[in-house]
Structure formats: structure tokens, C-alpha cells
Image (cartoon, rainbow, N blue to C red; front, side, top):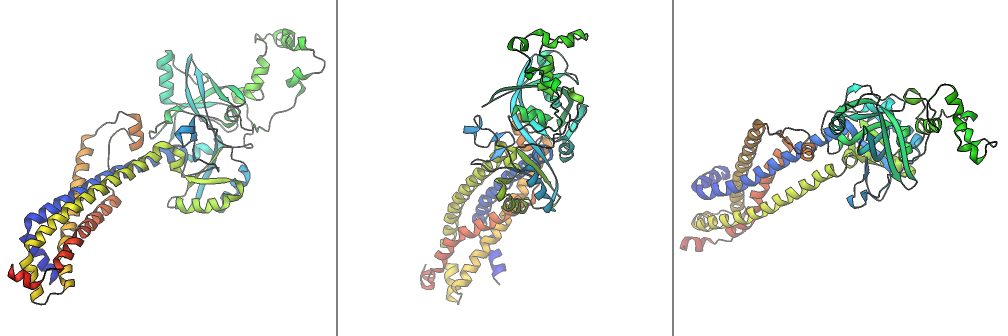
Length: 486
């Protein structure tokens, strides 16, 4: 009985009903479009970082601030922050086998330094990796030239964009085998290392700082980051430590005669070449030397989960296990850094703005409904005179406004979806690298997202019900005698 009467009243008060529907529909459409954009951005960011750089979960040393892969997530201290070393790597790695949700894991040492090559200098974000596991973890790394860094060998890989920038700046195309000179500064002073270029690669998705990344052997990264050096192949051959011979005097150490053997053999290397080879390449074997880099310390352990596994649950269980190791597990968003966290902040601010707009809409709708109630005083009074209870009057008005809210929500979502289709059909190209990274692509594409649609529909219904509370209370206070008299 209530539903037919509610529908009839909606059509009898078409003007007020349409105004209320438009207000709620606009708010629902804005909520749907905005959160669809953020949902697309979150998916794009996750694809950019989780499939190319951060995995699903990272394990890092517990600290007062959370860390991304190249520094602190607190910008004020980022320039002065040293990424702490994650101790007990072997023990933690052994514990990971107890988690069936973990598909694979690898480790990384991170360091920020300067790269000098072909008379050009640029910033470099070094990923010191375990090559035996790293590239299997990240299918988004696409090899373009050369080869992948091999396990236990010295070398580095740069991105295609960096290679193009070097060629543009120097006028010379960078070739595989070109020496790359890395310089870092820290509490222990400057560190300089030179390794050959072994490959040029690209990521399948854009990220804010991905073009600055250099994938390098972990031993070189450890030296540059002043992290424990852990190669197992260094032999204490007396020939390698000639400078420490007790028979040598101070003058002998700085004499060219120390390297006379090399020159006598036909070599033309300048003095100290042998020492530099040893310091730069560990055993003087060059890029082809195979070493054991499995030991030593790391900054991060990176985990990839099996499809369908709950990252939140795995992180909670991991943190229980990691309490004894002074380590913590975090999701990919913290590892990606401020750009990924910024999306959450922007989404929260946007929804706060929508909430304020909704509050304004509620006030406007309440005023419209109050006017409608006063205009229906005779109708409501007549209903009460023939025995309609307070609950019946409440149910009638709530039913009317719920129907309006449902139609408004549907209309808002349909309008929002139409707008998204129009935007997608325009194929808008994004030139800004930061925005392209946040949206996960160069072309603006916003997919229809079921969750924002459902939330928008629910928000429209809740908005209409909340706006009905005060008018309903006013309606039930109308006395039959007053209504008939009026």
C-alpha cells in the first residue's frame, strides 16, 4: 500500500522530486568519477611498481620512519637519511619458507650516487641485486640491448631513456661494455667504483623515478653504500698485497719500480693500475669474473605473493615472525615512496570535499522537503484523521525519498560512466611524467570500476535518507485538526 502511494506522491510533486534527484545525482556522479580516477591510478601505480620494482611486500629494518627503496618517506629528512642495513638476512629468508602465500623473494641494496659516462654526469638510483633471483621476480623489466646482469658478475644495466639522454648530451652512442663510473658520498667519505655496461632495458610501465634506476651487481652497491662487503672469493695472495711487504720502505712504495714487472712484460699501464683493478673489481678479473655475492647484508627483502593471496594478512603474520629480528614488513605502496602515498592523501582529500558537498546538499534537500511537507499539510492531516500512525507517515516519506535516492544514484552512475567513455574516446596523451606515472600510462584511460559505482549508489541512498529525518519528524507532528482547519 505504501509503495504505490509513495510513487504517486513523487509524480504529484514532480518539481521538488526532480530538484532533489538532480542534487543527489550530481553528488553521486562526482563521487563515482573521482573515485574511478583514483581506482585507475591505484591499479596503474601497483602495476608500475609491484611488477617492475617493489614486489607485493618489502621487509626492511624497523625504523622511526618508513622507507621506500631509495630513502625515507619523510621528505624533510630524506637528504640526510641513510637506509639502515637489514641484519639476519639468512635467518629471515629461512623463515619465509613457512608462508605458502609467498611465491618468490629476492633482496636489494640501494644507494643514491652520481654516474659519470662519456663526459656526462647524472644522478643514479642504484639497485644492487641478486641477479639469480631478481629478474625472475620482475617480468616488467624488458631487455633491449646486451644481456641481463649475470649472477656473481660485476656490471650494470641502464634504462633506454638514460641511454638516449647520454647520447643526446655527449653526441656519442653508448655501447655495451662502456665503463660506468659511480661516485657516492657518506660518513666514511667518497666511494668510487667503475663497472662495465652489460645491458640496456626498459620498464613496461612508467614510474616517477624509474628512468633514474641503474641495476648493478650487489657487491659494487655494497661498497658504494658502505655496507659490509661479502665476497667469498678473495684470496690473500701475497702478490696482491705487495704494498704490505715488510721489506719495502716508504720510498719503495711510491716508486715506479714497484710496477716494473708489468712494464717489462710489455704492458703500458700506468702505476697503480694493478691496485685500482683490485680495488674496483675485487680480484682484478673484470666483468667476466664470477664471484659469490650471496653473503653479506642487504637493505631490503622483496616478496612476490601468489595470485589471490591477501597481502594484509601475510604482512600481519610476517610482522609477528619478524619481531625477534628488528625488522618489519610493509606493502608495495610504502616501498614505492611518496608518489604512491600521495594518491591515498589526494583520494582522502577528494572524498572529504565530496562529504562537504554532500552536507551542503543535505541542507538544501531538507529545505526543499520541508516546503513539500508544509504544502502537504492537508494530505498528511487527512491520513492521520483516518487512522494513519506515526510509523506509517514516517515509512511513507522515507519510501518516497528512498525511491528518489535510488533513481538519483542510478542516474549519477550512468552519467559518470558516459563521461568516462567520452574521455576515453578522446585518447588524451599525458605529457607530464609524474601524472603519467600516477595514472600508470601515457594515455588517459579510466575504466568502469564496480566498487566506486556501488559506493556511489549507496552514498546517494544514504544521502536521501539522512535528508529525510528532519522533514519526517516535522510531518508526524502535524495534528489532524490543524490540517483540516488549514
